[in-house]
Length: 420
Image (cartoon, rainbow, N blue to C red):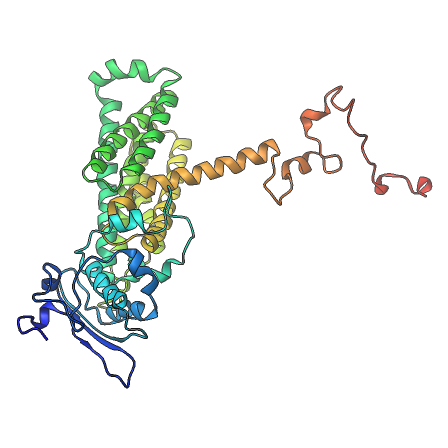
């Protein structure tokens, strides 16, 4: 053992020839900032960066047991130390490096953007992909201690709240400021303005996804994307002569703030004293909608037709329900796929997941309305139009079946006296 190495600066590996390899890991933040003094030996593990290529084959039940131990003992904090005692079935150095890398993740010292970008399964534009079982990933938010989950939720919802606040304020200025109305409204009233802005919104979303790992470019693109979003909401309001879009922005902001408050609270804290687990995201979403619906109803009761018609108010409530459900469900997937320092990526995935989901829904609706079937499925709409011949109403015009094969008349349609 090197004489200058202290207990806080090294990993002590004790092995017995008669027993399986047993590793006692004692790490702290001091050991993560500098390499070990002295030459490396078999008893000292150098604290070097470990890529996921080396790590993933060694993320076994033993590594996940450390996460469970930290969850039970609540010893893993951002700056604290972790003392874990576990048994490895193998003496590979990669296994010990996995523990070191896990400790860095738990303390928030390691930037995992390069690891995720180059080695982990590619996310494409969505976190809704299945791929590997996320429960087997010890670096996912859902598998880390509640304190780290709480910090991640607060960062994701906080960043999303700031973005929605900017969108809401910009939309209000573009909608109600007289100076802006004289200059911008002339162009926004054109029929093609909403289409152009929607295309710019989607293009900005694609660019935002491409640069989501590049700091500070990702924040700059995020601000430009938010501006396009605000102008798009304003253009839709001008086209339909309504303020419902502006009200929906503030309603979404209120929902996100309530989600941040409810999802970071400890479950049972109000009734059973100090609790260890966080409130489930879906439960927090349900509570956020109930609380957000009250001020919306009060505001509509005060202003009524000054802002919205009754139909528009119902549509805004439906929009709030959809947004609350989407935020609650998507963040549950995000917590299973991302690591603690990827909160910016989580905010981006709120919008990219929504884009991919809407594209899938639009594709399914288009295939259903045009009668184009998926592989292994029948064309349901064509069966509804003509279950016997498979013809749609457009095919019943004159001359449509001049060269077609005659219909096969089923036996049930032939009188019993003529059946043979």
